[in-house]
Length: 320
Image (tube, rainbow, N blue to C red; front, side, top):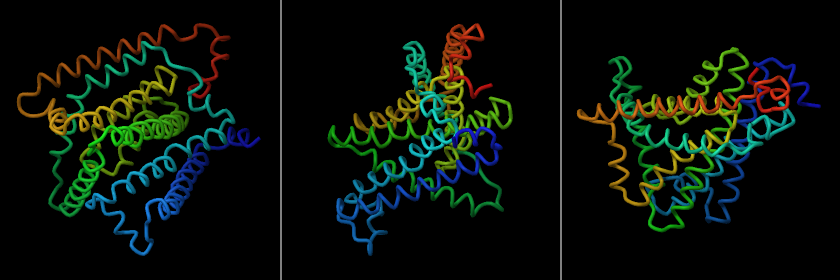
């Protein structure tokens, strides 16, 4: 079988195949998205660049559709194909064959909730990074890209009906949570863990790639920390649904805050920032660290104690 040939392949060969699968998925689904958008949204290819202008409110539905196609083609489909070629058992390879325990789900939810001040604090630090004069042109480019991304995100998050809110939940929370965790934790984290024989390197390299992929320098640090958190949740739980749920919750909070009130969303973004916020950050860090330790201890106590259990638990085969 093809999966057997990949088992003996080098990690470099696997990396090349992963990158090829990602590129192919992206190109195929973007072309497919454009083809579908012609009859569905009445897009004229001669003026396609105008249809991609986010400043025009009439383009938002098209942009959301293309965003969903982009996410599926880049993040969801390639990991499934890669898992099939690498193991032949997709659900086991991606660690989605079992439902997670309720305790781990609740703990992951609390970790994400209490991490908001800490993440906002890291975001503030990241945004205050200044480049040397020799890199001023690069700094200006990064700021422009950041501003454009923020404007597009704000337009996507604008909701005036419950149906639009549900669409945003699907596009901005469900699809990214599943796809990005499949790709970065299920594929890249596993690859670099096996390559370096060090789970911490695997987690942090995947977290860096996860953050860098968003092409937003001024959110690089907090997003990388979040990615690492998702990575450890996967490693300790050995269940992909745990980081997927945590990732979904993180994104869904933002979508929901904007749906309830734009002011509430802005206030939530300021928690843990400013001169008097150090106490909030410290409390956040203590609570998150405590919850992570509880998560770790609960999962450690449930680890199989004998060889027969380990062998029967196929989901752990890649971590050894």
